[in-house]
Length: 251
Image (cartoon, rainbow, N blue to C red):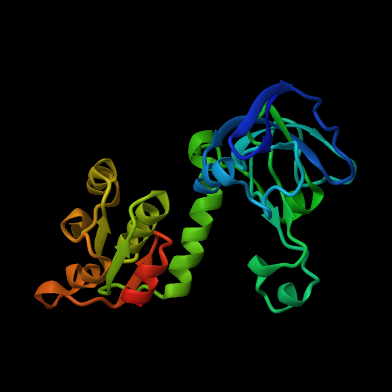
């Protein structure tokens, strides 16, 4: 098959490689849709010691597709099934898994290789984090399952209630999905960002109550004022940028 192989920062190649036959519990999926996550961009630019430990490696991890082959012992899936899979699955046995903190799993099984014609999904991910798609869900939207799941988890953890005022800083895909789900929860949502294209997308996609253009507030220390001017106030603040100065000054 044709596949993108990752050799290091800013070094990827389109090559012919063998499709890995499915071992016990594994599933080979014909990739129909593959997305580019922000983590993929960072990995391409400077590497990622956790996501990619050995090179060359397959690349890309958000995908959906059609089951091509199954390994022995696979019962929940069959060839022809339309599926989506996460790019990881916890072991369920380590210290953190026993406490329900699966994101901190010491033996996390990771999957790369979505930028290819086929991807072989490890048994643990097949068992725990692969799903059959409903007929009315297209492949492109289904490939958003993993980032959307993070947002759904975050919304559940924040305890957003109808009538809350929620401030969201950052208008990338994660910020926009947070805004949309917060609105579906019945909250009043104020969204803040800088990118003109994303500001426009925020208007069209998120249906928020107010959008703050942070280009008017170049000093991070003044961002909080943008959220609280005219005594608006916030019940919940969600940071989707990843800058320490935002955490320190807002929270």
